[in-house]
Amino acid sequence: MPKQNSISRDDAQWLEGIELLATLPYPAPMLMPRLFKAIRTRIDAAFGGVGWVADERLRPTSYWSERLSEAAYRAYSRNLDEFLDELPLRMQLETDGEAMRALQHSEAFETHWYLNDILLPLGVRWAMGVPLFSQAGACSGFLYVFREASRKPFSDDEQARLRWVRDRMRALSAQASSIETNTPLRASQTVTLQFDRDGVMVARSEDAEGVLYLCNEGRSGLLDWASPSVDALPAAIRSEFGQVISGSAAQRLVASEVATSCGYFDIRAERLQRLAGGDTDAFVTIRHWEPIDLIVASRLLQSSLTLQEKRILIATAQHKEQKEIADNLQITIGTLKSCVNRLLQKFEVESRQQIVERLLAHEDASGA
Image (cartoon, rainbow, N blue to C red; front, side, top):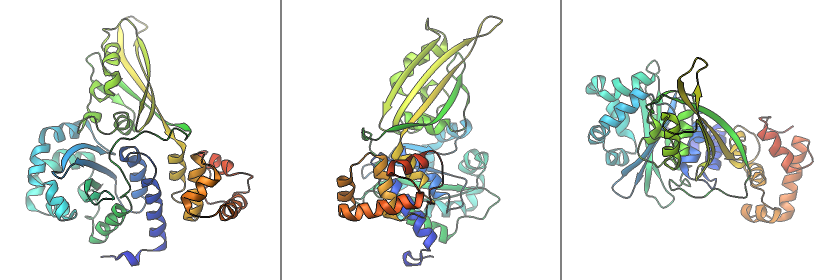
């Protein structure tokens, strides 16, 4: 098993990037989609999932997965209590995640509903997990990654790497908090949902589950965000939008802006009319706006810039003044100016903001 002092330079840079994301001033549900993408750059996994818990009893409060089908949603909803009886969260905590791998190597697992109703239909066979801890040392949740049946089981080495990741994520807060209002927002993605008149979701964009999870602040019930119905929509707009979807409202179009601790969302529902007469399904479009410091931090994950240079650019995206940046980095204004000058030379630009704009435009983050 690898030891902490055997971390390679590439691994150190990878973990540094994860810690940068985890220390941004946003609740954990908002950060997890980008954190999982970062985790999977150095751990061979098809997708990840995270479950949040509350208090010392480890009471489950919500769960999110990068991949979840309607069949898997129903299996989770139907059997979750049974699964937690067979693999209690307390056991997962006390074994530091080893219990998850041990279960998969038992004979009984080959016929288990979790394997046959959830993992295999999602295209995976192997799972690995670790408990998450707050800075105060309390268990705040559990982090999981999943891999295809055609690959080997997760190894001791990979389990250790996931623990490295966990240790760099202690700054995460599962609690909702307000977004930094001084940080500009930028549209990050738009997804579309299709509903029939009964409020059943019949189709959705590939990344819709993640946006719905964020819409619901990651805490609207254990799996509400994954419901194949109007119940997946944020509670604040569910009734009004549900009437348009069902056709019970006079209007055929409704739009709303929803602000949550996980971002801002422009949401629009429209029931179309067939050219030959009669109603067709309703379509809901959700546009997600993210703070640009989160986007910039994600762009910097693979960058060869120093940690200090990355922090300066993230602070620039947050529109922080020089003195505040210097104070946060515990350096003098003079040292900050020297660091900024080196950045400007690397990128061949005239201001920090121009570097941020380059990062937002998906350009190379390594500098000139």
